[in-house]
Image 1: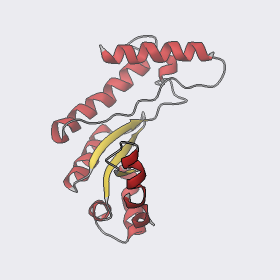
Image 2: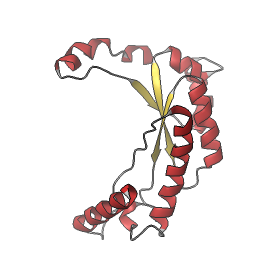
Image 3: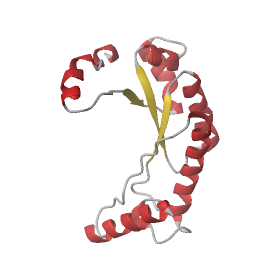
Image 4: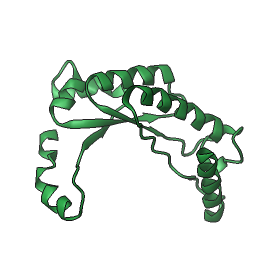
Length: 159
């Protein structure tokens, strides 16, 4: 049960470790709203989450995600008092950093699209977290190749 996930039992241990803040968040995209409402018994599931102590949602993004729909969902989350972060999922697609060879390729184009959405959300909420994963692929790319492409990808993003 979500209420049992309170931070109170772990707070003394976290304080000893120097971690003063524990926030409860949830991976939640626009397609999850109806089921979430049924799960927590609320017609307004986002307000219900906030009342239960959830402070943030991570919105999963795929290559086929409608950025307009995700932006509307992010606004609804913000109106309910939830912080929003984004997590693009590109493993197994041409947009994964494993295929990064420059900004004009599929990884660069896809991630610029995700980052433009993050910038729009940041205009409303301030700093916005985007969880970007490094290169991931099965064989044949060698681990060294994936590492080098991850370094190139994240270096390009910093430019």
